[in-house]
Amino acid sequence: MIIRIWLLASLLMQFSCGANTQSMSTSVPITTSNQSIIRYDSIHHPVVARHGMVVTQNELASRVGQTILEQGGNAVDATVAIGFALAVTLPRAGNLGGSGFMLVHMAQPKETIALDFRSIAPAAARLEDFLDEAGDIRWDDLTFGARAPAVPGTVAGLYHAWQKFGSLPWSLLVAPAINLAKEGIVVSEDLAYAFAEAMPIISQYPSSIIAYAKDADTSYLAGEILHQPDLAWSLERISEQGANAFYSGDIAEKIIDFMGRSGGYISSQDLQLYQVKERAPIATNYRQHKIVTMPPSSVGGLALLQMLNVLKQFDLSSLDPGSARSLHLLAEVMKRVNANRRQGIGDTDFVSVPIEGILSEELAKEIAASIDLGKASSVSVINPIDANPYESRETTHYSVMDDFGNAVSTSYTLGYSFGSGLVVPGTGILLDNQMRNFSHRELGHANEMTPGKRPVSTMTPTLVFDVNDDIKIVTGTPGGSRIHNVIMQLLVNLIDYQMNIAEATHTPRIYQGWRTSELAVERGINADTSSLLRLMGHDVQLQQTMGSTQSIVREEGRLYGSADPRRPGALALGVDRVLH
Image (cartoon, rainbow, N blue to C red; front, top):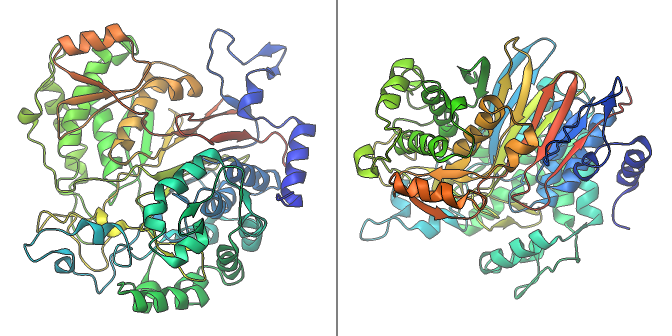
């Protein structure tokens, strides 16, 4: 038995106390006043609970968060514990050596802030180091190995959130991740596939082989046990010393030594000077809801709000959900906003970003007026700007709400799956490859690489408030450049089409990019609808699934959670009893 007693006790409590899981909610109606709140006219059923909800990409991490809430911890406590647990259980994206964004809403006193714990460019990094003799970019150096990592922010971000808003002891929040790393986790089919896919990179580095492979030629198989003793050592140092362990203590020493031996950029000063930034969220009103999201260096937040501002100019609810006319409108809005979503956007500590202009009503009306409701526009007419070629879809997102009315939406990443592929010896910590996220093709771009600067990201953690300014929705998703497009469709389904959160999550999605005329659609889009879209001028192409939203809706005293089935292993867990 590899799961610690605390987790077994948690599981027993769930079965004895009727805690909700996604599979249970469809068969056991939850009632009040002799009236079921489960809609039996729908095949889409969310998890329902009264005192808390956790939705993550990984079952074990969800159970860690649920246990923290059951112990009386608040949403920030659970968020911190989940962040560390995912570094163990979802190593392709969960991390200590990466970075992210967090939106925190506290009910008492009422406050909503954005925590920017994005990685930063090391002081020694220079663009010319990534150019070959012909002046072309060496993308492999930006993607893999010792020069790819930026200065990580995850540990600082989680610690900052706990210091400001946490209620339980720090060591209690790190303990579940330590136990999982020591005792081992069962390798799932999904994780086994991820390991196999990453072997060409992992096998290049002895420390990465030690952490994530059986040997240089053999990856872990589904059903085998993955122990992570070096990562457990790092987590123990963090439990004892807080973030200092990572930025100036024992872990920092190992990172600096390894960087020096490997030709990497990260220095002792880079780590010691790293700071989490508290920023004011950005927001717009959309059909009597306030949509709150991440400001720059997130480009996704601005793009999401601009899309919604344009959609406000149309009566979307008069168009049937999933119809050719509604999907055409969504695609045309995506096409225009995505075309220039990175223009002028960068780290606001280095550049001035015209947020008010981008989110102005005048610009939204101008964009809306350019849309023909019966005909697709050509990409060449939109004149897209492409300053950055690719953003990996291997982020992870998780959402938490607690019994006190607090809510947290967190997205964090290593960049690519398994980041740079490089594990710091003796630590079990994977480093990201976020140096790739700067705009290297266009000198003078707002996202140009500069020492100490944060690269832009499409990560878009999102909170939604109702007409009374009470928290209503917590959501977010991985998906690279598709992130804000996925969240926009989820919000349209919830607000315009009044779907429950499970139906809004399961509804097939589309994506219209800015480089080609291709309109990507998921399986489930009606074939006749696709034909009608083609007649309107769209180049409809069936593609893989888009995003993996982890979402919670708060309504009439209950919490409704939905884990997106598009990526395996996700789980929504409710809390119906809290040990205050």
